Image (tube, rainbow, N blue to C red; front, side, top):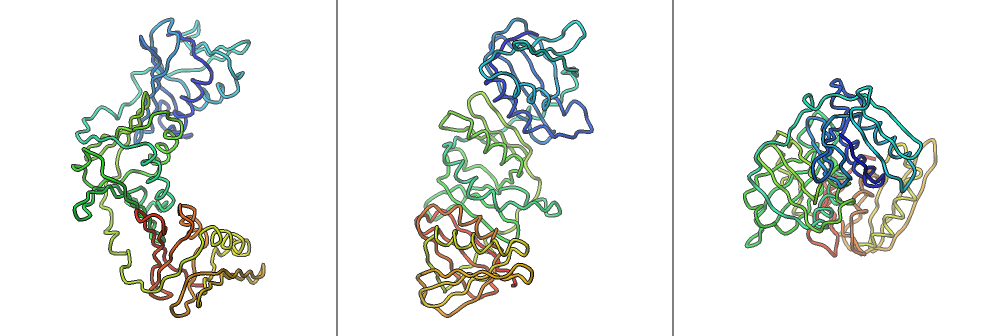
Length: 372
């Protein structure tokens, strides 16, 4: 195998590969990226046995062949090569190793044969549809912050995606929750997605797809799935992942429908006030929101650090309430509000609060109160 490739192109591809590969592996070949020189380009492949990424890039092919080499080391070497340079990769050299040459730099790396490299992407994926890139980015961004990291409730360790009938309209609904907050976002259901059953896409897969979307120049993403796998394809990059095998809880039950007290205020002012007050609340993460007619007061106190208070104008004409929140959870939600104003609705101080972007009815957020 012998080929020459631009450093920038190689670096971009290897950044995708090393992101999937775990830094510590009990199976040595899983630390490697599979490299194959084809007739029309170089195929790179990496996997952690749950997620697999494949990418084909242009290069000057001198000789076909294939091997695997350490993904993180290859990435680090390429990252430190001179910007704008060309990289020549040869396998095997006279010592049976992979040689990377660029300018006056030369590296030789140990390899593992391709016959030991696992493949997880061979299954048929009968359901297929196309999503606009910006639409997919949007639903991911507005939900991923609420994905649980608690391994005991593994079925919450991803975003839940399913088709939903809203009267005559069919929607794609994306949900995430960690038990403390919930994000629920809708977008138009793509053609072909009607047959999709509810699926749970793992947290790591969501993060990798989001990175690829930023790097991609295409406007549309092809999504294909089966009962236990999903594949996102964008141009010459394909990410295949196992789905989480579990039953997502009935999230609709925790979305209150009878919160009759409504507070409306400027989202930037609220975010800034919560952010300032949070300096004192960094250890406990607890703040209090006190509502009264046409104003809201945000406070926090710490025996060690002191106290803080902010007062804001608001639209509110219901009874006075005092509600505690984890300020980090509240800020995560406010960061996803696109409009100028946000509406919080309450039943009482101990019940879940519902948060709406007043300019966008496609998203709804639920935040559990915190005892302060």
